[in-house]
Image (cartoon, rainbow, N blue to C red; front, side, top):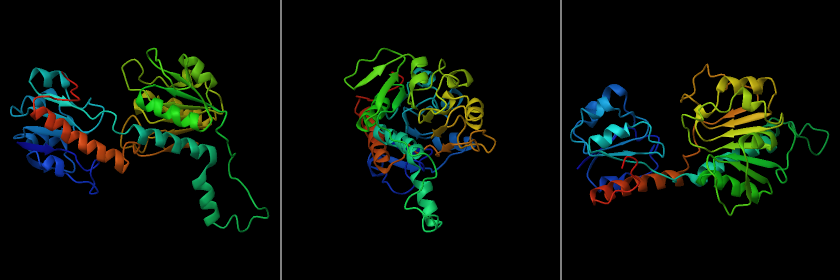
Length: 317
């Protein structure tokens, strides 16, 4: 079996092993594949793995040997799954590999706004504490999270993990979900307006759909507290970026922590890059070593299960 990984670098920049996939067949790994090279590199492959390389209908029609596509991520919009099904190509994704890692980054952003550890540490390096007449100072208000309200938008596995951490820190948790959710977590389901109005911190953890694209916009931001902090580790297009930038620059809300943008990598003209009190990380929530190890193992398990006639994590059944 010939196996091709089209863009393996983000998954494995050198700190993981491809051994599990190598044990299955003849493996070729490309760090990155430009659109002009996809067909050439995938032509003789029985199985192809992709993270962000697009495999559309036109391309798939030119790959008659291809029987398996492994998406090295949870989202699989880079593959034309409908045509793949029609062509007899099984498409599998990697669900739930990064739940704890994503929830952890939500709170890395949240805690930055609560206490700004990095900024204070840098001020000490710069000599400000040594020169200070008092034993303590702070560059920004220090906020205790206990008693604050955390609003979670999207209450799947990641949203629930975020809620559990918030509860452990003494926060009141409310959540909004597109369907009624029964949970043993000490959190209350509310409508979106209620969540926006009452939350001190808002964490977006819902999938992107045609219905919710750009749902964080001028209208919904107007419903938030002026002291609210917005965290997005979901998908960039959930936010109208110009509306959020305008709100931040006018102090309509207090801050935003973003790990995703509508266009990635970030464009230099993205209004959020220089927006006031906006901290952007380069889509790293998924990228802990432990999460990437799980992703690598599940990717190999998906291919093995397919070869054994019992495919798992199929998204185009």
